[in-house]
Length: 458
Image (cartoon, rainbow, N blue to C red; front, side, top):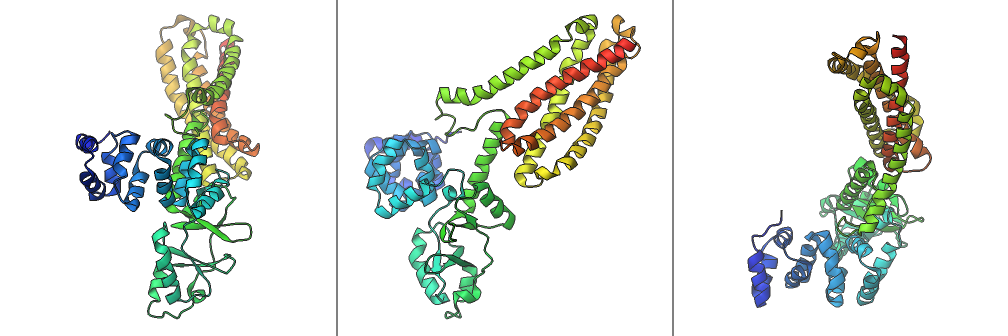
């Protein structure tokens, strides 16, 4: 819900160009609250307010604005003012923003930036989007390995204003090779012994990632070792950046959103929902809808093969949705469990046999439970059906089918993600559509096979 508490006053301040009141508004509250009270303003109005803050506060408020509004401000406002803002943003944040800004506008802004900032942006933009290098910031607390505690603290006092985090201080040699790490707490604990060399207190057993590693490797390491930041090195182990915990959280949330879309058979969006063009949105959804439609044709074809039998035993049709949904739901449950376990690193492809036997047993248990319920439901629905009453084994059709369908769905749902992973495809994107299609076809084949076998015998 948009916070409208200060909107009338803000618009009146803007209309009257009340500089003093606008400056007070920008500085009176925490930047997050200031951004919250501007949610009802458009991008131009928000920028007209924010520009009255000092450069440090302006940067902080800007980072709390809605992402779409940030992009619009960069694309529509004065290029020199935008360049001055971007120059003060954390390196990783500004690169992420510029990835979504129109290329022509980025080319207009870059020459207006200081040379060091421009080179930094170009270097970070060169890393592929899914790598650790694209996620890192180059604002690093870094000192030479030959320094002592007093010299290191003096050096850090010069760097502090431009650093995103100062909890970990990285120790490097003259060629910037990563040699060790020391925490701010360790450093401050040695203030009483200022001549202590960093080499004596630094930790040389460093958890680091390569700039070209997949960013999921970095987020996994941060989670596993409970780090606040992780250093990023190049192929020669030179320190090139760090990935902070807030960026890890953002990456995990983004990955979760992508997985949620994939599970619904939607290719992840490159931009926000409202910024994605209609035809692009239709394409990302339409590809998999077409695949599912094509598999639906096979389902309809399988059902058509049993048209005469369904006319002969018309009461069987009533249970088709029950049987098909049970198999599909069981399959999707298994697929989701396996995809989640793969992402968390709990299982690997080599565990497929163990997974098969576990899901086989789970499927039999779940199928048996549903079979008991299905027996009661089938008895209630067909109790007064004269055609069904003439058949000896009709009460067993639905229960036996449910056991087989749920078991097959569970096994298929567990193995398909592993199969697609083995082929180098995305299990989250590929599995659920195929699980649904395969479960439907198997449900029809099993249901009709069981029905024909039992009913023909009685």
